Length: 305
Ligand code: NDP
Image 1 (tube, rainbow, N blue to C red):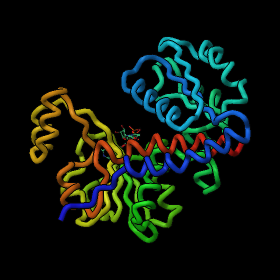
Image 2 (cartoon, helix red, strand yellow):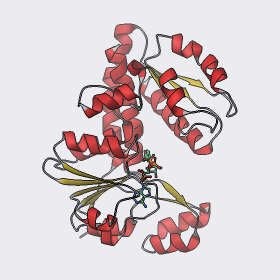
Image 3 (cartoon, rainbow, N blue to C red):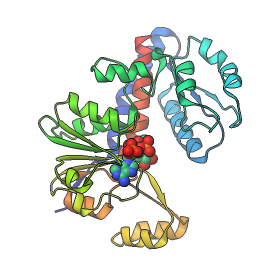
Image 4 (cartoon, rainbow, N blue to C red):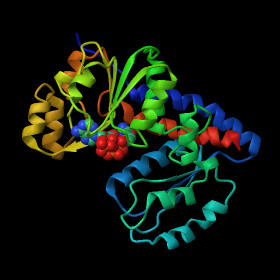
């Protein structure tokens, strides 16, 4: 029996619809809407698309957005100078710096300078991450927070379940594991040094794949009936690989012929569909929730201010 599709797009629309009256109320009360500053350094094509989608989401909701696009060659000093007016502008509720940064800039220097804890809309700052560890209120990293919403709104129980998170990045894997732990899952975190990854994954009632490795999680890694959350977003151009992964999916193969690439997650799509009880498709699963949660964080910060 095929697993149920967890429709991230639909759930993100629900979340965004719930935000609309809150945005109206804030705008009425303060005489100005919530506002988000987005700093995009350089012209990385994927980052440009992400930023465009984030700005579009603010526009749809009536949130004010401010964009700053310094050149990719900018020095740390010049960047700090360029962001001064944003940092001083107390009408801006939330600030994000689009990752990844150009090579000459160091995230550990740039993020704490630009994003103060009270405007940390991505939840990547030390204060927000520390608050997550002790389960206190602060902006939560958007991708794992969106996955928790997806589980909750799809009525998938977490307490007492064995959750396995593959990936330990500061923006997905680690916060994901902590959020599942706070909801009383028993959590295993796996990474590139984990021995016998398939065996660990097969123990999962809830398996979260966030490695950035196209379809690394195959049939052998999935316990029948598990809930599988596929965070990975990988663009595949290798024809042989695409043909073998999507042999069951004529529409995807046609899209590949047209575009020369397809998006694939970290989980083999057919294995996930056939073995899981419920799963997030790629695209249309986790991706839309990330943006919805960014909007939630912006509105939360505006209300807090
Ligand atoms: P990172 O590259 O920062 O982290 C990847 C993690 O996966 C690391 O902890 C790494 O282990 C682990 N890993 C890598 N290879 C293996 C392996 N062979 N076996 C087990 N673990 C492995 O990635 P991110 O966390 O930023 O992102 C992960 C994926 O999620 C990417 O595909 C990204 O595009 C996607 N993503 C999607 C979002 C969405 O909105 N849908 C949002 C954010 C990310 P180690 O620590 O040992 O190196």
